[in-house]
Length: 170
Image (tube, rainbow, N blue to C red):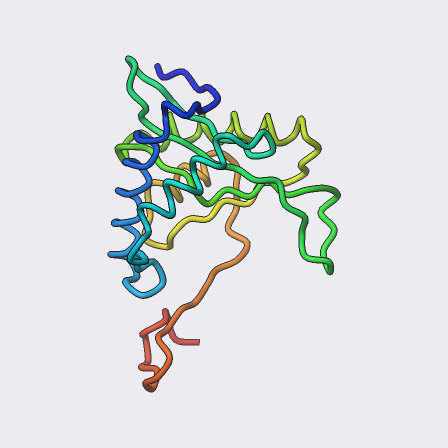
């Protein structure tokens, strides 16, 4: 069983490896929305390095036999001014495990550990980003007690929309 702990600067390269793999997969799901920028890897390295060093950001890793097998990055954010969930939101969009079969165990363990830390900082809800086609992550989120409450519908602009291009017909 993997141990979940706070990430350190020594974890940056393994976290980047996991994030890069997830980013490539998501780019296949929707090549425009998740198209990596030309300097994506260096930008991500810089952002993750800052996040690991920032005591306000929750960055955790799951380590099994000395190897980082997953990570989660959670930020506490305020909700839009028109909503009041009762406190800060634990927002998670950088979250990966190195094998889909590990979402149900390592992924859920990382999520729960991040939520415990966020709750200790007065967070009242957790919001996790997951691609529509990321079935393993979505199943783990559902099994952990999260529910789908919103979706993003995406299409390229500059040409007529085609029926079925953005999802099922209304």
